[in-house]
Image (cartoon, rainbow, N blue to C red; front, top):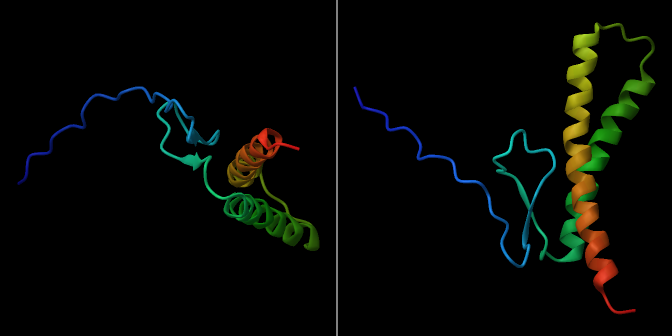
Length: 106
């Protein structure tokens, strides 16, 4: 049997001086693993935000088309979390786009 070595101690993420990579708000703890490349082309950032937000919109629209859906509060809580994660990611990317557009000369 192979001996497993524990991971090295966690080192707090220190943002790069040029803030190229911004941690997503939806990271589940204080050790971010998901980031947005703030220097990516604006059209690529827009596609990323659009994809996440529209995916949630599609799910919610499908729910609206159904008649009555009965479920307990635990299921509703899980479903809300499922929707919040990609929405928050999309909003984070939109924030990056907004900052980049605001920084552009008029």
